[in-house]
Image (cartoon, rainbow, N blue to C red):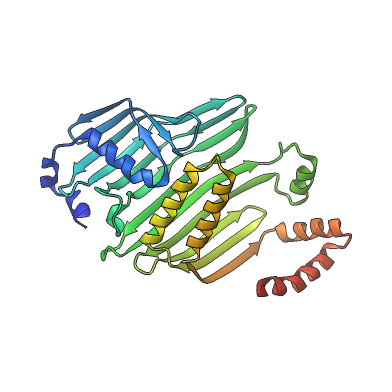
Amino acid sequence: LYGQVCRYHPSCSAYALDGQDLLKKINAAYATGGTAINAANVEVNGDTVILHKTTLKPDAASTQDPIPLGDVKMTGVAAIDDGSYEIDRVEFQPINITSEKSTVTASDLYLSGVTIPAKPDGDDLSSILFYEKAHSGPINIKADGKDVLSIGEIQATSAIEDDGASLSFEGSMTGFKLDLSTVDDPKSKEAIDALGMSQLEGSMSMKGSWELQSGAIDVDDYVLDFKNIGKLDISFSLSGYTMELVKQIQEAAKTAEANAADPQAKQASGIAMLGLLQQMSFTSADIRFDDAGLTTRALDYAGKQQGVSGKDMGQMVKAMVPLMLAQ
């Protein structure tokens, strides 16, 4: 709450900015997930900080070259007296990556309302790297000069409630287009054509909340809506996803990364992770699908594989579903 007030209070700018300390604390917050960020130079000019020639290594154990991010510009940066930082806006340079015959581009990339924690090992929401909004403009992937995947816009917003005990979040993706007509595998191509999925167009949206003490996660809506396919709407609730469990999962992930080359250690880490997830409880779920043509095509295709009509396949599925749900 102090950080939210401080962002709009002129006295907060009295704390001198230390660009290296800011980068250090960003890395400390990301280190829990194994991510490392490096910059060739850190420039501070008033309340603006620029990380020059920035690179990102998403996995500490990875042997692949870090991902180049170019210059990252942070404006409206304020150092808070508890050691944390508030940033009005973080802007990333447009992405344009060419590899062999493929090209990936993305633009209008930014975060706003960012909070960098002083210490990432606390037991409340002030110990996590938080942003109010994440945004990406058009994303495009080309292969052999042909558009394979394009997205108009992606954005995600989150807010800490006034009591500091819960977090709400929303996200959306619009203008999604995927071209599957270039798939080479004959069997896959047959299924794609039969299901009418050679050209996918649609959108995605979700919203929910996380209550810290109980670890309750409520996803009110998770919607996938595709033209000539249908709309899948899922809502569900889980409990037990506490900050303590988050830390335990992060530690288990670090151990798994450190022992990635040892098959037995990797298997043990997987079992340990499943054990941790047993602390969570499944509360409820609701699944709805509004058909826009896929169901008939899917039943016809599946029936053809079994030597029956689509209508008969539908009757078989009707009989099977209650048994599957009972299990």
